[in-house]
Image (tube, rainbow, N blue to C red; front, top):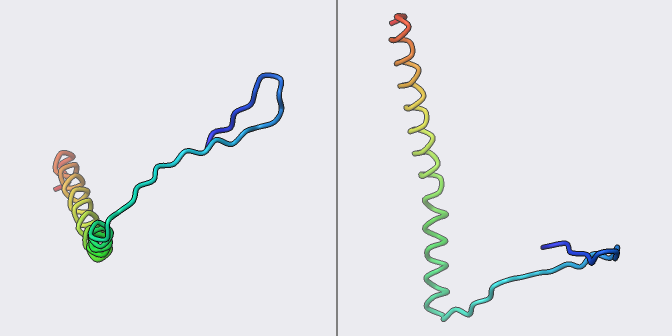
Length: 71
């Protein structure tokens, strides 16, 4: 949404833009299937990324401890 006003005019005008597309039944069913797959895999993806980040942080901290001569 954009707010526009003419110079000297205090009234704001809302401008809306959108895209529209018609789907075939097959395209709609494919979209629903993809949505279900994404929803089912989202938890696993988040868990995987979290584990990767955790491992990266531990590796970085271990490296820092080695550089400081603590271990």
